[in-house]
Length: 357
Image (cartoon, rainbow, N blue to C red; front, side, top):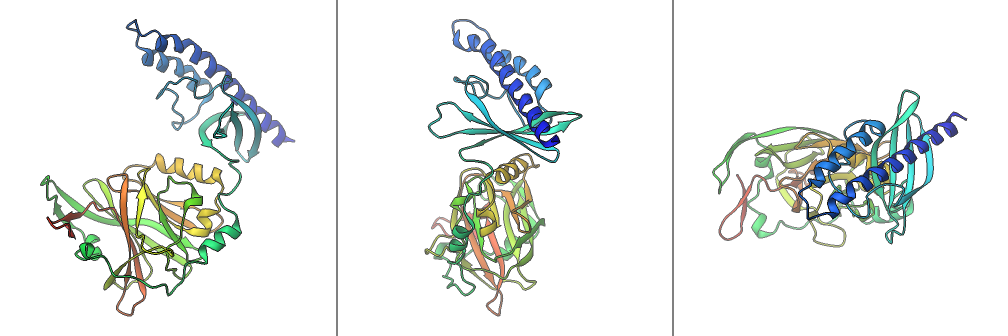
């Protein structure tokens, strides 16, 4: 019974927020429409959002004053409540945006505030946030393409000058062009836990159904992850599968063929167990991404992928771009490391050959 009452109370909180947001938006709109005056429309809007934040929001993860648009981003004029539910001290209220061709939804996340509720996050979705990105069978089918003895190609000629062991060696470096110097530091980044041994490396901002496995799999287990930093940025990540040092490096390709570079459009990268990541619920992914967004920069953190698996997410060097991934093999030919290089400590000569600073 308390769950039903709690859900209704959370729903009422969101409804009041939608009504109040609509009222404040209508007060601000004339300032944005009247371009002939010298009224500071954004200053007026910032002032109007203060009571919205005070009355309805807790924490610092909801920003209402950062933008103003037509139609409004939130409010009774553009969305309606369709569902509410409670899980412990947290409630979720789902709304649908009117006439949205993309089926856009907002999920309001609320936490208990005494006997009431306060909004702590507003997540955007295009499907039911409770559903997984992929079904278990689809994820298993993708994972089946990875093999522990998958063939490893040679590193392309222009990348053969890279030395990932040096990349993870503490030292002082000087940028070739700017002549800026930086201390290079290696530090723990968490623990990767994979129950399948099938890994994926991709932009953490992408939807999880776009994840594809690396062609070579590893033994299921828990493995330490380290990062190297330089020039105030994450320069690389590595997963250590053994204490042995790599003696050869190979592109971490996909089962479909060459593809050891992955694209980043959200300034983030992750190393994850593919089946666990692909089958996360949209709600769990949104919560994890929000946590990542508010982590201190340059951020790196663990992300729970379900009941047991744990991935690693980190800011990707200088942000968006294409980044290479390499397997490091020890003298016995066994996989010793997986390295994601963000190219912060890499320079190229006039012929385009890369090397580490």
